[in-house]
Image 1 (cartoon, rainbow, N blue to C red):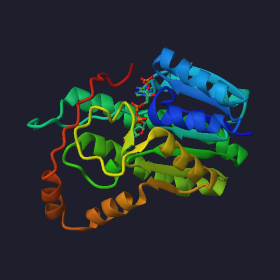
Image 2: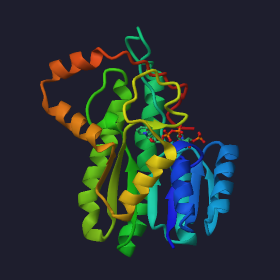
Image 3: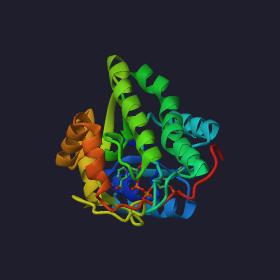
Image 4: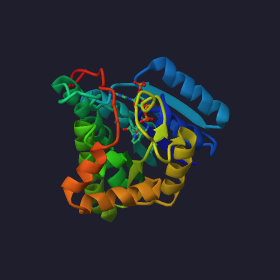
Amino acid sequence: MKRVLITGASSGIGRALAAAYAADGADLVLFGRDAERLEKSAQACREAGAKNVETHVADVRNREKMAQLLMAADGRGPIDILVANAGVATGLSSGQIQETPEAVRAMMAINVAGVFNTVEPLIPAMSGRRRGQIAIVGSMAGVRALPYSPAYCAAKSAVHMWADCLRGSLAPYGVAVSLIVPGFVKTPMNAPLKAWQPGAISDSEAARIVKRGLDRRRGVIAFPYYMYAAMRLFSFLPSGVVDSVMRRFDVAVLETRERGESP
Ligand SMILES: NC(=O)c1ccc[n+]([C@@H]2O[C@H](COP(=O)([O-])OP(=O)(O)OC[C@H]3O[C@@H](n4cnc5c(N)ncnc54)[C@H](OP(=O)(O)O)[C@@H]3O)[C@@H](O)[C@H]2O)c1
């Protein structure tokens, strides 16, 4: 029976992944910000068969609190799988030239520093045990630049690179690192997105794919794979050509209302 810790477990992909592990009888440690939504997710996991579910309300930007909660959770029972999933989206609406600097900084603090705050505290314990898995949720937006969400792409490419580096540096210590690269997944994050969403799947389908990849300790779990291959190919093609093709799509990404670099 695995002990699995997931951030962003109150909604979308994180909540669905928690439910998928619950069905296997896992011992779950769920993190979220909205206490009510987190408790609903936890209750669903208990009903689905989780052996044990503990919940923690915390903002991933709060480095000190995250470290304290993560280490305490690991002390109660060693974490086998840590999933750094919490994140927010932001981008440009039609006609908007530049993203609001305060929104950019808040998103960066959540999507980049928040991932560091989630993963760093457990590296010494996992590598000391020579056992454990770390999964970092990126995005297709981290593979090739999208003109509609500059800062989000920058944040996701940063965590992609970090995950790829950690995979190499932690392997000798018995810790496996997986980079998760979702395409379009139907979650509250994506609901306000005005765009053609090829290959969009449900959160439970995404969770099934992620869990299967983690069971196999895959280094990169990208889905749909054709989209990942296309994004990789685009990054090799002349940038001006790809940019002009991308600009032809009518895409509006709602700017995040998140503000503040730390709570
Ligand atoms: N949906 C997609 O198409 C898609 C595609 C590629 C990548 N992703 C990535 O997948 C991950 C999950 O996204 P989702 O689609 O499942 O979105 P979602 O349904 O909006 O869920 C986001 C989760 O992150 C949590 N969160 C946000 N800010 C937080 C903060 N400051 N501190 C702690 N928790 C915070 C939310 O908690 P509260 O609700 O409790 O605040 C929520 O549980 C994100 O990293 C996202 O970038 C999603």
